[in-house]
Image 1 (cartoon, rainbow, N blue to C red):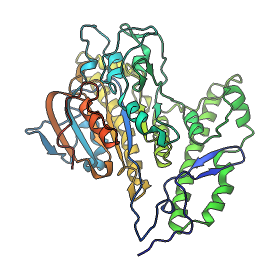
Image 2 (cartoon, one colour):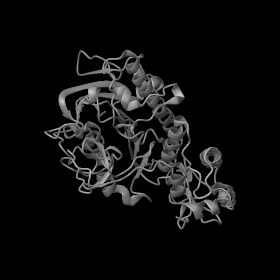
Image 3 (tube, rainbow, N blue to C red):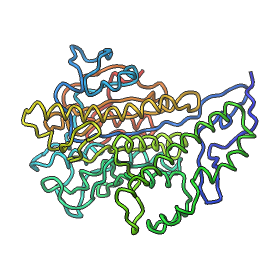
Length: 453
């Protein structure tokens, strides 16, 4: 059977508007070569690392195992219960360790070391000056190899603003706590927390005004990004088949939804703190809305192949954020120093579970988004975890793996590795799946078993 499309499209097709906006398209059927009836997927592999701060509490992340691996039961541990609908799509990895996060003679400072070592495996230099020293993170090693195939080699996103200078944790620079991506051993990649900035980077004009005050003034006279490209979208739709028109409509609706939510946050913030000297912030006051906006922007970046590598720091290490959305007004970091207080422990568990709810939202979106011959979930590999475990330790750090990875990963299980197995072994395996061939990463000493199909 031959598949005939009304128009063959290049994967790099953009919708363009009079304002200079360039809206990348998702993968459509008409972008897949239809020769002799073959419709093989050309979907690339995507990689994402989602990080939550301040560790976990005892017996809330994994289950006791009698052997080395077992299928996940219907009832998941408390913190992971929001992922119950996706039980067959996740794997819990026990006993993975980040030796670089340990003191190794440097004394206190576990939060700073946790952030800096999570994706680098390196032991950061204890300093709060300009002489930062950690390592190149796994996402940036991948970006150096495959980043040239997309508009952005990588994206670094965050859910909480942090500063990059000063002493944040017992002599460790704030840069260590506030970044998990490192371009070079001395250069962290600070995450972008503003949804508007990410949106404009993905869909705005290349020559966008950089001065925030001037840009805010221009925005009042400018139509939305989507409005500016609708004429081009209608012209394109005429030449597409029925399924592609539906996909295009769904995609444009999703982008409109993101844009509207950003505008709503800006309007609400302007009403709360009017300031004519600066544009209103696009960061929603509500953490659920903020995190989901960032997840939706991650989804759009993958869907349009704008990048294949993303890190998302849900909140900075040693975060003092409170979570009024779930009735917690105490500082998260303060609660983790609970001294056995059951009420404080319960609040920590509630926060961890709340964070997982946001990740579950992202996982559901990935599974619902078509991509080539499958979904974005099918063509991605994603970790969800932290650089700290119980009691601010760096052994057995909470680690969850998900994403179909083109059918290469065995999911729906919990695996218990030998104690002191480096987390870098997982990163080495993920680099291999990205087509990045390296013999060793950080303190890796081999690849992980039980994961390959």
